Length: 372
Image 1 (cartoon, rainbow, N blue to C red):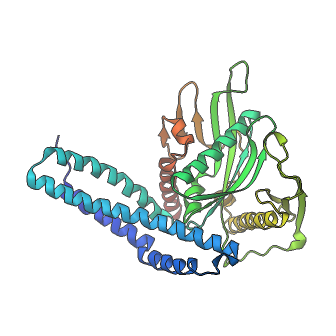
Image 2 (image 1 turned 135 degrees about the horizontal axis):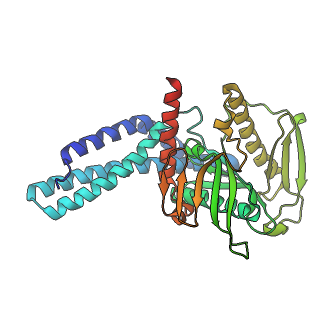
Image 3 (image 1 turned 90 degrees about the horizontal axis):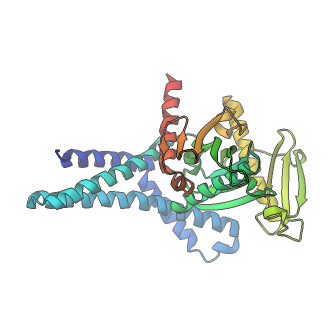
């Protein structure tokens, strides 16, 4: 069997990397990093903790993005040198090593190329994700908690910061809902393809007769607002409730009424936050979530596409976008893209990139089809 045409393959890799470099605007990224590093070095940086966290978080995320690109570019350079040496010396073992590395680099470049498909108005933003248990009782609550862990593990794999704003625990096991932010560039564009109903089929660990159970959970993804976004919220339109934070099983974790629930009366949108220690901090965090959701509603109404931005789903039969089957066989399959994995445990451990990439490509294809 003939080996790869290294010259042609390397030429294609370099062309793709050049396109990625232009789309990511690596030069502008380096300029922004330099500016942020100057701000971080300022002695009064932490006088304003909220601003300091925003600056250091942005710097960390940009450094991670730049490192991902530059390390991949270095691997392409190293591969070219390896191929030249192997060809000059006629070393079959080294050529085999180069072929294996070519395949690995090709997959990494393809994954990075997906970023170039994220060109939507809010795709570059950080993401706010809400998970809600649906039909299925305690199994659904447990499934919702499994999804929460799945997304946080995915973020950890990519060195993305996660901030949990609110978790509502179910009485027996799992969670009723959770809202968290993924603080990384393009987090919204990447995770927005996860919005929809997720379905789990397994032998229920909560059924003493060992019967198979189907349960559902809904995932909603909205972009985090920036100061330039125009979204005004009238204080008179907001109902504020305060209560004590609670842990698993309803256990109180706070002796004061520091948790805050905000209800936007005109739209009925409800958000809550109990992550911070003070009522004031929780109210500020809840307002961030509320404004993000109201912006999503506003843009969705303008475009008449509420489901696209907010993921307005019922978390029940008929509208699921992905199945997680653990019994009688094991498979995770996306019903939109047909992408699948026979290793559900790896998926629940955060290995989501394949599903995310397939979803982003599927969405771009659907957008092109709608435009024609």
